[in-house]
Each structure stands twice: as C-alpha cells, then as structure tokens.
Image 1: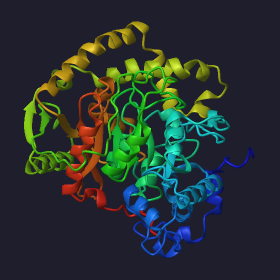
Image 2: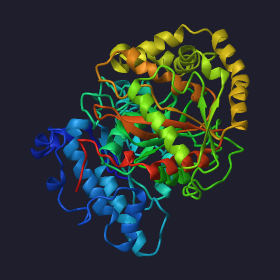
Image 3: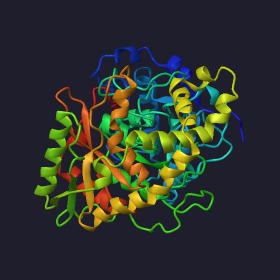
Image 4: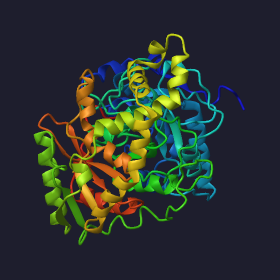
Length: 511
C-alpha cells in the first residue's frame, strides 16, 4: 500500500488551501451555493441518507459528485468551523468512485452505499493518524480499522475525514489547545458541544450526512443538543468499542449522530453487533431492525416525566421547549405519566459519579503515561491535566464502592419501566455556552447525562425548540436496556410532527 495514499490532509493544509472566497463566508448567514459549483447536481445536496440513496439509484447523483461537493464545503467552511483534524480527500474520492462502479454493476451494499460520513479522531482508521485530539499523540498511526469503522466501510460509507474533539475526549466544551477550538455553526463564538465537537459541527453545517461519536458522560448528546441534530447513546455494550481510544472502560459507548432520526436508525443497523474482540460487547443483545417501526407512532405509549428531575434546575427557554414537546407527544396519542425515580431525585451525586468512576478510570488508563511524559501539561492540555490530577486523588475504595452499588441503582431505575416506556428530559439544562465560558457552565449539564451513563441506559437526543437568541434546544428520551428501536420510533414520531430538525444554522453549506 502507498504509505501516503490514506494519510490525509492535516488541518493546517486545509486552511492553507482554502480559497479567497472563504473569507467572504465569515459573515454569518452567507450561503455557499454560488461558490460550490454544481457537483451535487441540479437538485443541490440531499437532506438525508435516504434522499441521497434514492438519487444514487435513480442516476441523478453519484457518490463521487456528492463527495466532491462535501470536500468543497469542507475547504470553504473549515476556516470558520475548525471541525476537522485531517481530511482524507484522495481516499474519499477513490472509494466514492468504487461505490459508483459497484452500483453500476449491480452490487448494492444497502442504504449506506456511497454515503459520505466523518469519523471522530479517536477511532482507528487504517493508514491514518489517530491523534485523539492531542499534541501528545499527533503522530500516532493506525494500522487497522476500529470495528465500527470497518462495519461502516463494509456498509458502503465514504470517509471524508477525522474530526476535531476535546483532547482524549476529556470535556464537553469542544475546546482544543493543539488543533484549535471547534465552533458552533449557529454562533461561531459558542461551543458546538463535545467531546464529539467536530462531528456535530460538520453535520449541522451540512458537510456530511452523519458519523459516529462517542459518549462517556454525554459526548454524543451534548453536541446533538447544542447544534440542533440527532444523536443516540446506545445501551452499554451494544456497539463495539474495539479500536477506540478509551476514556472510561465502565461508561464508554459509541453511537451515531445525524441530521434526522431515520438516518440515526440506518446507522444503527450498520453499527450494532456482538464483537468477540471487545470484552464489554453485550452477548445477549437482540438482533432487530432499527428502521422497521419508525412509522408506528406513539399512540398508547407511556412517557414518564420524572418528579424533581425533568424540570429541575433548567433554564426557562429549555423548560418551555420540553413542556411543548410533552404536549406534542400527548397530541400524538402518548400518555404523559408523572413518576418518581428516587436515584434521579438527588440520591445520585453526579459530581461524585464523574470523579469517582469516570476520572478514576481515566487516570488508570492514561495517568502513568501522563506522569512519565516531559512537558505533559502542554502536550496533553489543561483539561486532561486537571482530569488526571482529580482522578489520581480518588481512592480504590471510593471507586469500588461506586461500582458495588451500581447494580442496585440500575435495578431501582429500571423499576420505573414497569409503568412507562421512556423518560422525557432535557438533553441539557442550557443552550450552547460561549467557548470562553467557565468550566462550571459546561459541567452543569451532567445531571441529564451522567446518570444514564452510570445506569447503562440508552438515550436519544433530538431538537425540540430554539431559544430567543435562535440557539437549538435538545430533549432526551431514555429507555430500558436494548430499547433503542422503541426510542427511535418515539423520536421519529416527534420529528414527523415538528420542523425543528429542518432549521438551518447561519453557517450551512449548499451546492
């Protein structure tokens, strides 16, 4: 194999190669339609995986044309969004041409055939650098594909590039001292959420049709909420983590982000499956289609509003949007049920769960390497440095106590699913903070993310409104273990009844 073939273009190369026209685009709201050419055909860019697939098969669009369009968009908008660490231009174009040839010859890999996506830069992609967003790992080479990457390739996806992220997935801010901060296409001064920051920003700005993120303490649900797209954190163990650099062995998951719920379901169909090479892969996971029941609606389903939790300590615009979502579900035929779930009413100390499990395990994973590296604070960055310092202070006894009580807490929370099909909560208590906001502003959202990481429950985040400033607001549906298909069905019903997912940010690529 040519060693340079898949190596990709680094972020600074992208910036250096950006056209002069990109400077014009710095004005928020400027369309790029006139600058992008006609690569995607007369109909413009598809709005979904489903639409792209129909156009591929009708002959009105090719995968190569769509890939060329997105690469053009990346070149033009990257100076504003800083969503990528590397762009895999040559590999993407070559693979897109192969997928087009396959369709011509009657080989159809399914709904993801020829679909351009992005990959978070903690996932191994053979022949590329996988930096994990850090100066310390800037030259780290991947010699094989992560299982989830392999599955998406086999399903027919085109990999456009590796996306920016919080270093070592530490944090939800989208800030990065090595590769620069990722920016929110709704307001460039604001966070796109993290740690899957570049993936969220790229999807929201229409630079791809989706991609896998990771979620330990919220890193899929946070960007989904703050950039106005859809994301799902699956049940722990449902999707393989082999080939993904770990943040916390007990809490890590990977799942898709996309612009709509149906696309999430299509990605889930490709990504799910037992992996004998992942020690946490779930043996008992069901084999289901995540798309089959999307049109079945919510009539007769019971949605729980958790007392002293769903509406506790959230900003007024968020409360109003979730209240309206509650009404929408009721109008669609769902029953809204007030419920009590004691662990969510203060029994669980979210800060302690974060430090005594997540940070303890993070220190076990990275701490020795951090402490033995000269100039570690600069190379690993301030958030990692702070995480390692805090994690190193957690005792084995504290950690083991949290792990021992975990099955009992999970059982208590799961009792609620005897009376409801899902919980409804905000994804986060706020809209996107400024990138320069204090750490406490970013940490506030853990009340709606960490508990469901700790209980290993699946949750889907979708847009449910906008603040007076025009920033997206996300809601979260949480279900019982392995109930992703039901959650996606509920989310699809809400999406079909509303138009929040159709609104476009000021920074949005069109061809």
